[in-house]
Image (cartoon, rainbow, N blue to C red):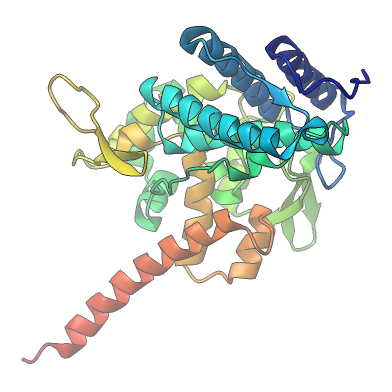
Amino acid sequence: MKKYARRVKFLNQAEFFSLFQKFIADSNRGYRVQKNGQRIKPQSIDNYTYTLKLLERFCRETEFEIRLYLVNHLTQKELKKAKQYWQQFYFKFTDYLYRKGYFDNYVGSTVKIVRIFFNYLAQELQIQVGLFHKNFHVPKEDIPIVVFSPDQLKYLIHDKELHDKLPPDLQITKDVFVFGCTVALRISDLMALKPFHLVKMPTGHYLQVKSKKTGTDTSIKLPDYAIDIIKKYKNKQSNLLPQMSNGYFNKQLKELAAYIADKEPMIKVRLKRGKPTMIYKDSDKRTHYTMADHVTAHTMRRTAITTMLRLGVPEQVVRKISGHAANSREFYKYVAFSQTYQDTETDKMFEKLGQVR
């Protein structure tokens, strides 16, 4: 690593971007790994790369000059100035992102990557950049969970009339979606399933797979309808299920969902600087999205998890199947969602019990 003389107070913008490129390269080559020792995921590296491009565009379009202060070379007065400088960077950079149309979640994830980069400089390259980045607030918002109800899922699984009226391509999409709603796998893991992942035991057929994202081993017993789906596509490809890109699958799912979801508006609201912002499907006509518009590949996994919780499968069992850690913040969104559903249903029961004839 390049050694910096004591007289150097800061690194210039070119050196900053060069170090960011090294951060990406080290992550990609496996020199930088996660805390559990696993390699950084390709999607994360793509996000790092795009953050670098955003920073370059920000500097170019706003004429902001990035300086990477070396705090062990600074006087107390210079440290105070450096702190003010990075406060100014944070406010100008986040303002730039908001003006580009991004919402809180994306701005937050971008700021988080900048913080990760600063930690990399300090901890792995031993460059004394200070703790200024610790004051970079990471805005967050909870996106409402869109899932199919148990009744809708049952309709998808068993209604032959629905299946027969679907065009052939949507029949395939439905089969993959139903399978995904059963096993709670992420789409990347679902598309990677091979025949050896299917294990036959005296008690039935099991799907055994290690999650690409978390490295968690998952084993789930398959119902008869899931086995029927596998048999339908056996010998037609090397994978257990028909292959399709994420983009194509999402497009197909919106068409499929239109057959089973109602046409009532499902208003889309996102946070920008902490304030709710209405998002229209057609901003000129101010028409809202419907449930079908919100359905994506993520809906499979979310539907599987919430269905299990709604129908009484214990949380620890669902967590084991879905591969969530015991303290997973994401998992407890599903718990809260299913609890709301249960509260609604029990309120209906109590209302009926309270009726006087």
